[in-house]
Length: 196
Ligand SMILES: [Zn+2]
Ligand SMILES: [Zn+2]
Image 1: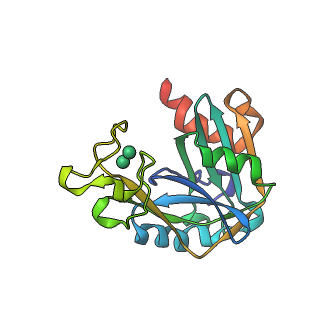
Image 2: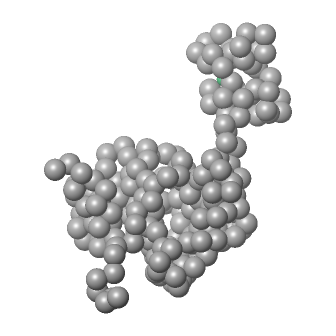
């Protein structure tokens, strides 16, 4: 095979989101999976073979959303993949943007929905009120009269232990996306070429 004719690294977006957490004294970027096995396999087959210094993470902002983009050179190019996901900006995202200081740990994580039966009394619902303020006898609705919450809902994120260090992190606005070859490649393949 002639190197310059190698097929491009495939883009992968079959994950549920990205969490940003302080853990081990450093910010962690955590792509989330609903299935632990899928996350473990993906780490083993793809990310574990990445060369740390080559890992790039890009954030391309477009109004209230952003594109999460992640890629690296691999010891085994045949199993390599690049990741992307379009996500709504969140408080945790903004905190990461301000606080990462040019470096982060990359980990994978699992995300699961939690309902009233799954949690302790002090677990916090998406409405902001704790579990014990929800009524098991009224389909788990919130007891606060002013609250519109009809059913307790929460979630849990677990981080897998293995990690890689990322030192190439950049934030861009979509109108400047051409300035960065990885970000440009991602949006070109996954957005612009699909609009035609
Ligand atoms: Zn609630
Ligand atoms: Zn409530």
